[in-house]
Length: 157
Length: 460
Image 1 (spheres, chains in turn purple, orange):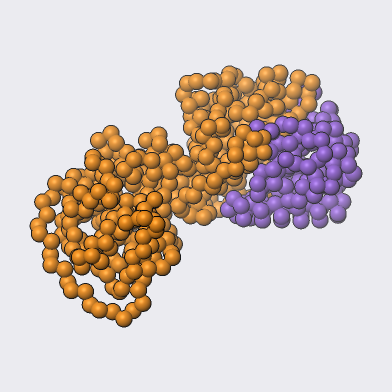
Image 2 (image 1 turned 30 degrees about the horizontal axis):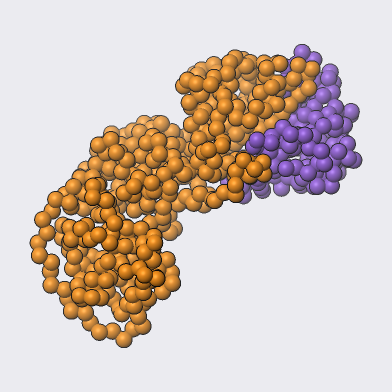
């Protein structure tokens, strides 16, 4: 479901957030980092290792929604699926990719929205865990009348 | 007791509700499938409630019908402190004060990109906040000194001083200059614009500015377009603490409407001001129940303005509007003395400046460069015609007001402000033609070199 265009989009310095839900349906939002596409149906994303609620939701339901937005023009895509693996230790490659991703994101925010790096970089968590996500559905989340439409080919509208 | 020592309230995190940074909302459907998306703005309703705008019947809204709980992340634009709000959906408003407040937000966003006809609020969803929690971030807080907020209140001493300064101004030109300079010196508004409404009330034109690289005198805004145009259209203050985000969001929504065929390709609404302005407050200048113009201030700081700024600017705008109307009345009633003899023109060997006039919109170009248009352009063309045909340089406002070629309305014309606008544009452009005030209701045309007047087809 994830084609080359969508891979390029997701692996650029997008602002990424995740949503999870407890077994009783209580939702939870959190920021996410360093998204990469493993194969056309699998995403690897770094999460806040200190967020115990997020980890508990993933352990209990496995369900996750991931929305990535390009801060320069707000083009957004939401992936929905299941976490198939949660690793406590990111690899060196994960961390390097995440750092490059964050630099790009914070630079985009500074240039587009004029918020200083010193502020935006505060969002970076102290430690990460890595979620491997099997993607089942993709939605165009770009603001406008077509927000929420299914993405068939991966190209964000 | 500080906010750190007690339970957080919505009021403690008020800057988070200005929309300077998009919020994040997570919901879940009845079967537990989560949904997460960005929100352009969360509105604080009261001490216990927030409201979200619903204009696209989103998945978020559908989820909340099935499962009324939501989780929101908000960032404080002053320091990037982050807060988590747990919400329970309470009701949907399609009228009433909450709906109107959110509709105002949507209308501002629509006005930024000329989408007033299609981009409208459908409903305001109101939620009860069940918990507020500051979430830990990876790095320590920013310098607390950076936590500049809104102005706390209106300083009556400073307002009185500005009022005194305006009261001493002998003419309209001095009034508008004193106002924008006083706003900077006394209130710290470093970037300001004063725009006046044209005779038809359809457009606003800039007559004074402060703190901009290019003065922008004569730049125009359509009533209804952008923050300034909306303030004029509604005759109410419009404040936006997230100009960058709102403009970006509006552009994206506009593109989406264009892609769906609901809107044709749009024009960019040109707004005079800072390229990187983050906050703007525009207030109408009203006198005798009529819109005279709009006073606008701008800052590079997000969330820079609040209710106290609107109050300060509304008072100043009202003083200005009444001063302008008073000056106009005086000018209209003034009995002119005979025109002074014109100084004899000195021959010059300098190359002639071409002055080209287009009667269709009154635009005037000097050597191919745009100078001015509308009433001010027609006025310049009329003056140069008198100068060429009769060698005249001295004029009275009254005689020109009666000139049918200017196409002024019989009632409530803006002649004086157009004359000031023309004078400033000529000064700004360092044109070889200038205007010099010679007395109440009188002025002199200074022509510094030979001119070649060229009227476009049939325009005279």
